[in-house]
Image (tube, rainbow over all chains, first blue to last red; front, side):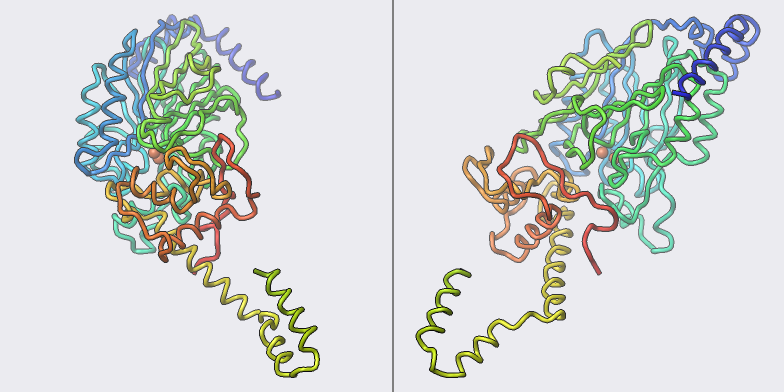
Length: 338
Length: 159
Ligand SMILES: [Fe+2]
Ligand SMILES: [Fe+2]
């Protein structure tokens, strides 16, 4: 309660004091420094409505004609069929399964069939064989931001763990193998790390608090079930940096399921995979009605799919889990207003 | 089993009352309280099976497409061991946990099924069951059940 009023107070002072300055003196320098186009526009708090798609967690194997290849292909075709056509696609990590270059190359080949541009971040399965080398070569930076129609988009690598392999003299393959297990109990909790926190603070410094923000990470930015790294250890710091914004929408992969949470100004949505659905962990959900039903093990597409997220002028988002089968409860079948 | 044995002991006791001290002695020997060492050994044997099952559960070697049981069932979750036997749609009948494990190996994992009484299968069952210790045996509901939360480590004593 206390925190909310503090945020509102800050938001008000910034708005009242800076709105004209943004439009006048500060806007050009701020936008050129950040390479942004939308700072002044966003200060009016209106965005140009659009929609974007999200895919994640394909877990491709270096095996020809693998069933997961076909599921990702199906999801890509599904995104291409969305009307109105999404302006772009975000991919939330775990494109490969064992961090092999061949898996990532195969994944890129399939993603390149998208009819719109896409931005991607790594998951733990993409990373721990060569510490992201192949991934970076194919996809570039592990963190980035851009502005679109007045919304500030951020992507970060949230799967960085402290070194557990050097002392144990593990080979890259052994390290990767351990990270491949969801319940790896010797790998430690992961996060974005100090470097990215500093980058984030710099990135949003000149973005006005009434700018709508969408942040994508592989893991949730809240403590869901740390045992399975359904968490990001420095999420509190991330939330604090983003606290000045009126509303932040967080989307994350890794959980392979529909899940939702709200903390302060952040609304978090868990995403469907295109490989297998994870079970819900043994904790109580804050929003138990935003949950998918149990999947049929005999149907390999059950519980899987992609996402379409539509934003209106007031930054109301309609998050649409496009589940291939029929596992969504009625209340979110047509999308969830976030 | 227990009941039958009890009856025969009673019978033995009442009919051959006077008979030999030998029987009495052998009866005492048949059921001495298990020593702590013995209990520890038996428990260790179970934990060895659980550990073996854990390794198999996380191994892609049972299948042929890279998948392991743990891909979909981390910490033994969503295996609902406490609900078997039950009618399982994909088995088309009332089946057992072992049959379901074999179905998973054969279909989603595209592997070769295990002998139902093999050491491997028993180990897998030991692991899956151990992850649900304390959960009440109950008929299946139409939802997945989480396993017992694991606080740290593998979730059982392992050396
Ligand atoms: Fe994943
Ligand atoms: Fe992941």
